[in-house]
Image (cartoon, rainbow, N blue to C red; front, side, top):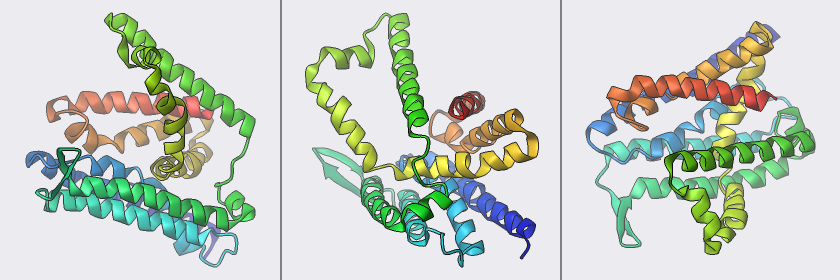
Length: 274
């Protein structure tokens, strides 16, 4: 198989998973909204699909590559399938609930939370066992540590700054001021929340590995640095369309939500490129 044919096959597999599975599940999202099913498992599962598309494409076309982190990829795909099944079962068997802290919640939503935590631990193990060379060969190593740190710091400042400005404009204290005024919440904000990331990084990797690591370089190579980022933002935004119509808001506001989603994704894409 020539490199061109292999790259084309990889791209088609990526599209089939990242968009084909997403839009097929989107139809279930619509149906679930009509029966008032618990829809939270759908966006949780959807975050896994872009990276799952990349990993499946590499496993199929580059299995013989000695540097392929096979066990990490297989572990991630296993978790992605579990998440997908939980979303499907939420619609097929919506009556399955459990009591937690006196509240009734969906059994499948609870399963997704366990799947993310347990799956993340499994993925950490297989990722670390993959070794430095395999991680570096497939974009899984921590590079440009100083740049990444400043990007993270800038994001936090922008995020909390936006929240503070919104609170001032509304004339209300908002969650940020409430947190600062309540010292009992500080351990969660500064210690527990960052720790939780290490127990749930897989959904975030699911999006970033698909969009930033795989699709963005392809679009930039074909259309240039700037247009590539703009196209990625549009493609990323449209990827949310079923969630925009049936999860984040009501169908009558879905179009507005989709437009805002595209603008947000383009803006984030430009920010993450810096």
